[in-house]
Image (cartoon, rainbow, N blue to C red):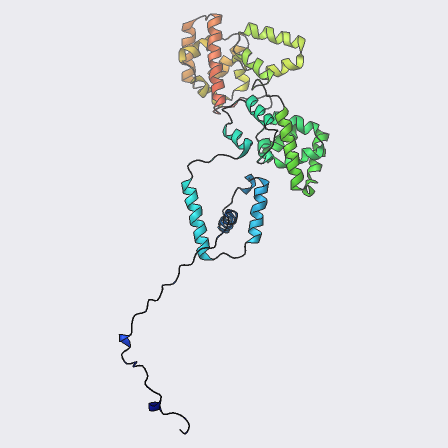
Length: 365
């Protein structure tokens, strides 16, 4: 074409035919992508989000409130995490978990929970007092562990609104027990107040919990595990019948109500006929040696003799006849020996009751 240079007029071009002879160039390999630099709080939020996505329930409620708030803030600030960063965070988390040798609970309440049963209640109370009674955990957890006998006075003395919050935070079974102990009118008012608790804010519930926990901590520690009627009843259970009858007669004159409570906690050989299920007699007779059982059966007199007949009537006919023969051979048993043998039978029954193998009947059964 006119005006355009011909191919042979373009000058010499590089020889491309021998491309294999071109010199080698050092082409760098792709640079590994570095994970994003994140603070530990953000990494914690990533782990929580990852586990929540796997439907793993995390006990975040046990964290201090400020930590829960910070975690929520981190979750709201994060938008997108690439897969490489996620893998790096998970690997770091697993390394830290595997490196943990021993963990300790945070705060005084956590420490006291670990030491529960190994230090005295007085020491625990003193530690809380010295610390100014500040909670790092959930005060309702401590309240839920308290015996019903200590919660009842609070439920009776506090306002019905506070009582409603208290019952709402306890396990249903425990709340039901407490409700049943309230007078009818008080129970109805508390029940109605529960219907109004939906509008109570979490902050108010937390403050109520801390206040109630402080009240419980201010209560003096009990010197004895059992109530007075239980302690007196336990002593009289193994006293001679003469001593027992004399003490009860004296208590009737001094404090009839207390005497009635003591009687409810007394279980003697004479009570076997009315408080032992006939189906449990076989278990009872196996708790003592046969020679001790024969002494108890033969030595029982008065009201106690009814229990002897009850025992013999609720075993096999052959065994009952054998025991009757041995009782006749034994003859008259000294009163002290009979008391000792009957107490051994009672002790065996108490052991069975303690292990849950049998249950003593009450007047309502």
